[in-house]
Image (cartoon, rainbow, N blue to C red; front, side):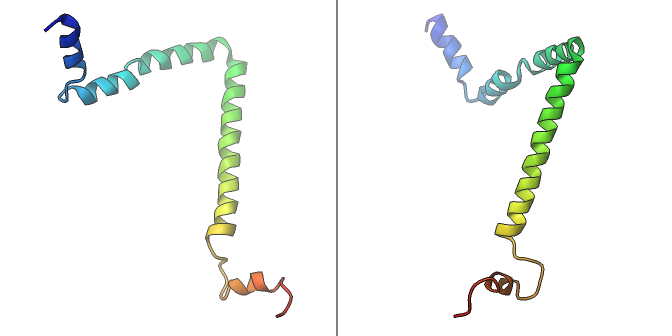
Length: 92
């Protein structure tokens, strides 16, 4: 078996498969986090703006989902709540 085949067999080994996938996904995680923190320290105005935009986006998404969830997916908290939707329609 040549070196490339042996390396491929080690890389795709079922025993080490989950470790390899984890490392590929998270191997440089700490390196990337340290780099991000250094960049945040170098330019705090941009960092605050980015954090504020992300927070506003999460807040707006949560607010819209809450309204849609209450109006479309859950019934109103009143007895015979479907009568509320019929009150606007003309009588039969």
